[in-house]
Length: 396
Image 1 (cartoon, helix red, strand yellow):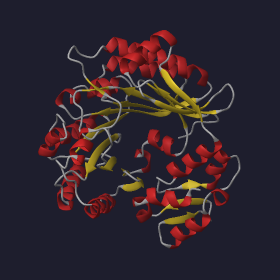
Image 2 (spheres, rainbow, N blue to C red):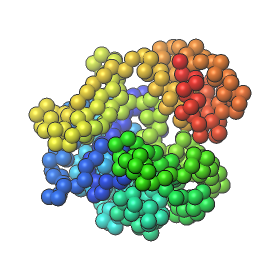
Image 3 (cartoon, rainbow, N blue to C red):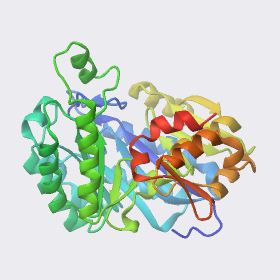
């Protein structure tokens, strides 16, 4: 994406409500209240916060907007349109900007797709998770596997070439062969992008409590490793490149522009309750990490009273910036270039920052590799599977 000389910036919009609360989800969210969502109040707070926090960045260019949550497809399309239009007024959108909306495949949300396209959405991300209706019910989902496939087919009609599907593996009782059959079916319907996540058990979730109480038992670690390898092999056989730990794209232009911005340490502004931001303060050049207030009502009231709902602001130290560059950069199969790292580290090369003895050991063992004449450090395919443990070895 050619953004000229202007600094690229992205926006994350957190829409906090869900029709149902999945047992595995640890994101900040709330169930839709009995009286319904106060759409005007939430939309007004989001627009107020957007104007306040985005105005100082008018010299940049927006390359992506991402509506996440929660379930942003429960929002009203006209409010989505207002946010896109306001963002573009404050910081111009690039001609090819990616504007993504997350959705669940319920019939109600399928029926709203066309309206979201009219509101400015260019990319649709659907949380299928699994095609197994029994697992969907146990996990607290309200859709069926058939509705999941129908949502993909409908989205492809409206957003051809720009539809992503989320799937998960490692559910209780799931076998590798069952996972393979599910993924084969989804690939038969898929567009150009898939996100495939291993089920993780986050503290504080109902799934965590069920596991601790031994009410459920997840597949053994070696079985989950087989499922991961099955996904890599099957997607590769269908022409999907494994470009990040959990992400696959059939063509390079289908890779998530917004998420690659996180992994490449670009600047982003988050609005909405609990949203995070990482950016360079235009006033003083300091790197900032901020978090909005997580409680929905307190956040909304703060937006009314103060123009924003920021709960915490921290300076990002040089050490934190370098660590983040390596942690996120090595999540991608393309890896981290020395040039990009030096732009973040103030000129220090990777070879002077990393524990090089450990790096070389992982290179010899086939988990890491130097590419482009040692100008870039990248994981191999088998290294990507265990990148978290590798990072513990190589970061000082």
